[in-house]
Image (cartoon, rainbow, N blue to C red; front, top):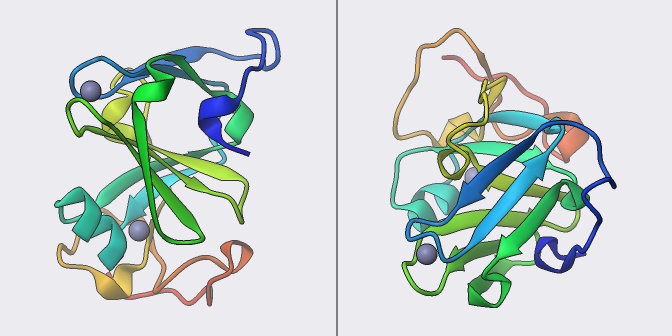
Length: 155
Ligand SMILES: [Zn+2]
Ligand SMILES: [Zn+2]
């Protein structure tokens, strides 16, 4: 399922909606309810694509993410079958990454500024370029329930 072709009604999910947009505003969307998880990803793919040292992610069921404007202005690239990375074709601003094998969409925390982001975990910490001593759990790769080793890394 693609987050961009979800046409669920506003009543399909309960909970507060938060507005998100690309850098220029051509693409707008909402996320609704509670995310399945939040944290920081330190993996090489996130760093290389974002051109930043770490990606702050929020993971949502696809039906919780609704594109309200500019759906045909969204570009997609998938280097691997597990991550379909999406951006605005006008400004290049990143929007989200679809993870079909998890049936989850990573909406970057930076593009939903009003959402009360609270990281719960750091993942792929063995690949880190920026150690963050915040006391949160650091996973060497991914939690077991996400297909990783579940091994905890030193902060
Ligand atoms: Zn844009
Ligand atoms: Zn990553």
